[in-house]
Length: 405
Ligand SMILES: [Zn+2]
Ligand SMILES: [Zn+2]
Image 1: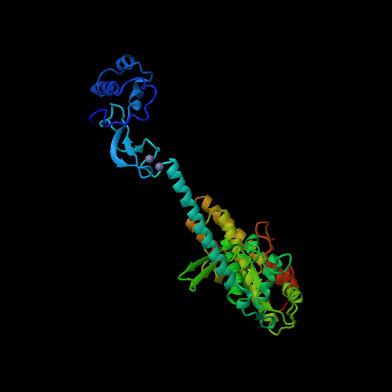
Image 2: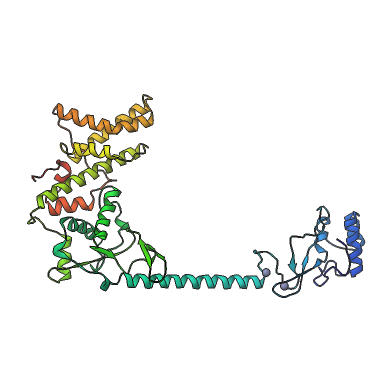
């Protein structure tokens, strides 16, 4: 790079060299890049700066490029003579407004542009949220939904609904609070709990409430009229989409909270089937809990379910808790003693439960009852079914399921 008075910009000269004429500056730069001792140059030209920083005072090179903001010519700075190129080609900047050709530039102009972009983005987000709100408000507007008739609810609807209402009905009884604060407390096992909620939403017994947290919904628009709404089943509030038999909402809420269907003809059969279902899920929940506690990773499949269904024909959940507890303890003991591998130990738990049950039956052992544990408290569904509906309370846990209760 040729060093001349013409191709450099002297407009913002550093005061440490401002006592020199342009020609003197050109001379001293030629000496610097020519290899003369820097200390000598500093002394000769009476410049006060460290040897290694002298180059930073040099007036920058003028380029043909024009600043996009103020239309001055952009300049490029010098760098120390230890670099292969004396001029830094990569750092062009505007000596007038400070703009740099970089997306990280924080000159006033660029800052203003960034600020505008952020505002535009916020405006866009606001519009998206407004559209979302409007879509949800019209889609979930009560007048668009046919109410289910209270007398047409199945026993299953009424049991599941009582679970949801007992756990999460709002103080003013007008909606159901987001279920997430009662997650794992509605029913044993995640699968059963999700099935319970989805049964009610699927039958439109409960419907997402317009006054839910908007973030609980996702809407995919194909166009304004054609859209797909998805929502977090634990995150939305729900509206009770039922028309009371007597058109008295408050009286209906009371009936739904404390269902009494002992007069229904399939009452006994329904309760027996549900008793077995709850018990099975309590066993699986306890099994998963004990297995996770000792570091086993396990996903109950069909075989496991068959084994526990069979055990429940002879034993209560309280007794099966004992069977599971011992099976897991024995398998970890054998694994820790080095007799079997971890995979083997974990796989042996189910067959060990099965054979323990069979031996107990064959030899007429009386199995002792284990208690519920603090980490797995009684869930709402067992409370509602056993205590409110069947009125057998703890027996639902300590007795084996039977149709004659
Ligand atoms: Zn500029
Ligand atoms: Zn800039």
